Image 1: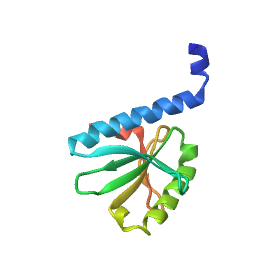
Image 2: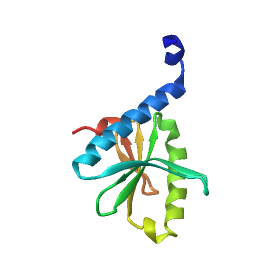
Image 3: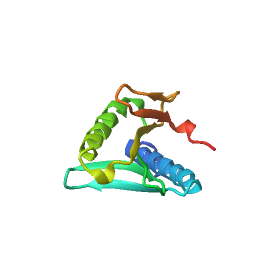
Image 4: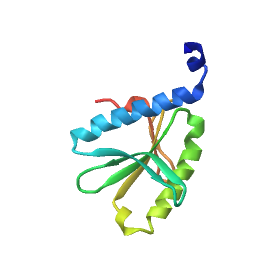
Length: 123
């Protein structure tokens, strides 16, 4: 069983996402925020994590293990941002973020999305 798990990339992706969400929950709770997963079956869209603080401001976060997944995650976030821009109840979106396991530095893309290495999530 353990050899099978070690060779299962999807298993590691699941573990990585769970680790990031756990860290996000810890940091969000410190400032009175909450972490959610968003899925809208009507428009077939999802966000790995949404961090919302008490005043209603929120950020959308995609969690990716490899840097080769950043562009696809960014496309998803841009589509969601464009969808939310049409609805006033989502107007407190303040940032789009991709947390990645295999990058060295944080940077802001031309489309405004912030890409952050997992190592940046520390107290």
